[in-house]
Image 1 (cartoon, rainbow, N blue to C red):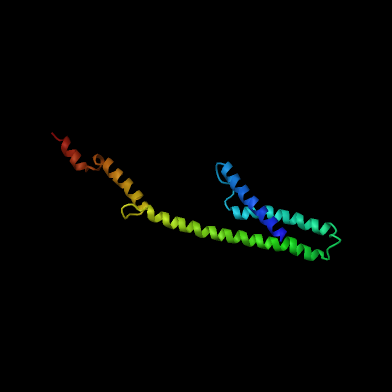
Image 2 (image 1 turned 45 degrees about the vertical axis):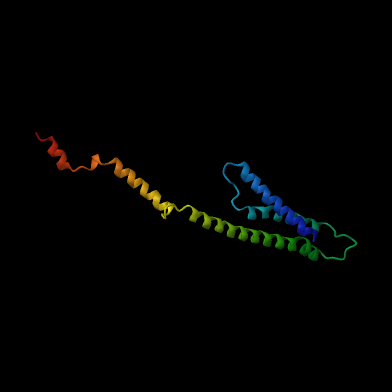
Length: 145
């Protein structure tokens, strides 16, 4: 049980570490903090597995190397990976809800923001070009004495 809490702690250290890294840089480097937080977890898991395999097991415990790897490395990795996937899925749903509510607030006068952006350049171009739209026949008539 202690190994699971240790790996969860390492996950959150990696998660908030990537958040701090993104705040310190001008442009965000880490786009998916949940997956980025798994890298230190897997790195420590490999080091932990190496220590279990290369060192002799405690004398008082009647466990095999396979059981120790399963209980102290594989099980916490599965739990932390499932936690990361769940948190990523849960945050995706909340982001969709936020974008859905903000699009209804941006509508002005019953028109979509993209429609108003298209209409504005048309008004500016027609207001600035009345002199250039005169027919050539009218210009020629004004020059005759």
